Length: 269
Ligand SMILES: *Cc1c(COP(=O)(O)O)cnc(C)c1O
Image (cartoon, protein in one colour):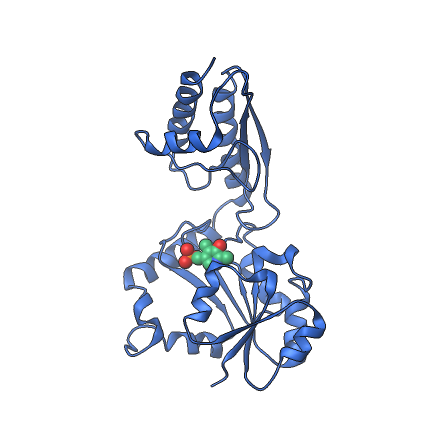
């Protein structure tokens, strides 16, 4: 069988374990020239990591064009890249032969399911690794009937959602939290949306060390060990803490606000 998958060096990430676990060799390239030299009769696929788009020399729209030119199937790991909902079909229209999305991220379906979109024959090959074919690589990653049905339902609900209203709801939740926590002297918030991957409203929370004596990693630890436990890290390489709200259940935003207010007050000078 063909046994090599080409990937841009800057696109390597922990999730390429799932490629390596098949036994293929990952061939790292950087330039268009490297790519041309790397393609050979053993090349099974050209893999793209969507969130790394800006890091690589070859961008998301050019990768499938080059793959077509070399007659090699190409895949895009876009796990965290809805919303916008149109990404569910944008990459197929761009020419990707296979595209994956997580079930348990913005689609809010089962955590252990996802969707594989693409050419029927290629998806059919992937299915050969799923139940009821037991002696396969996919056996250890079995997706149960419950998750499959849950995934279909989640996808239906997601497609029928009012996405503008949803984005507004996510922003409103953050602003509600912001209104509460900025009442504590020294606390400031600002808002941002990552360009790609978890492209949803985020809030950055910073505080003046003159008012509040608390290092952000300690703030994370205290929140995590609190009751209820809240996991909030530094976000997207920015100072302070950062959060988004699209995984919260209704009412949980109020709990987050309360716990943050309590934390900041306890550490106020
Ligand atoms: C989250 C993520 C995955 C894994 O998706 P799961 O649904 O958690 O299995 C794979 N690749 C990328 C780029 C991701 O962000």
